[in-house]
Length: 355
Ligand SMILES: *Cc1c(COP(=O)(O)O)cnc(C)c1O
Image (cartoon, rainbow, N blue to C red; front, side):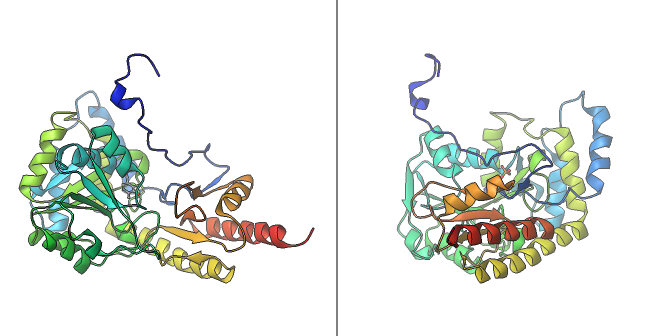
């Protein structure tokens, strides 16, 4: 830390992303990326965008906005795009939380970091004992709500009706639904935008669209809310999405069949892996995301994580209250999950047999 750092930032603890090991040798199940490559059309689209890289990217992302609008039935002015959804979430914390922010005690770890960064008061709402989230627990709160749906790292989701309850409960309060994992089996709040102008939906191409390295996020909301986000974006970095990513995103959106194939495969593999883990004694939530949240009664999660790491398999563990004995395991390909299950069998047998 230099002596020049603003004192307000001297105690800020940045978000800790999952480890990015060198490619190839490891089985990486720690950051919920897609195990599948981008849609086949992406490579050509990116290559076609290279000759115009000497020009700035389209700061209005007009073409991508139109594509989103066509696919969702929204107006192009109801769409904003960002350099990953983290950037759009940052804009929300910075600009749309004049009365503070409320979110679950167990949820995406970036929310409290953004609160610290922007000086927003954070109000934590504990999940119930079984990690479920009850809209009633948010009834009296006047803060801007941030709900990851499905939630991370629990994998549990609210129904569209429950999201509607959150919005209807208090029209003066903004409800931000982070749908990073919505395409793996949950209901999108998208149809609710017709009824609620206090709803903002944030999504990403990092998980279900196989473009984590491309960094593309989007926000859907009323024209007024999107204008607010555009106000911040244009005061910060109007060229926030680069030309290669704009091209990649369009190509990814164009291939519905590839998208459906990838998400269906993940859902199938999740189902099969959950069943096998439960047979091995793991307690798992009924995740509708592309990850599994699991704990074992006989071996601490931290021990399991360390032992898996020695076998070249990366999973996520947090030294945090309530979830210390849980692992978050991204759903990879079938062979990756078979390798994980074999390693876990081995570790548990070794760990529990008398030596
Ligand atoms: C992964 C994730 C994001 C961020 O994704 P970007 O890569 O920045 O688009 C946002 N919210 C949740 C809950 C996530 O898990």
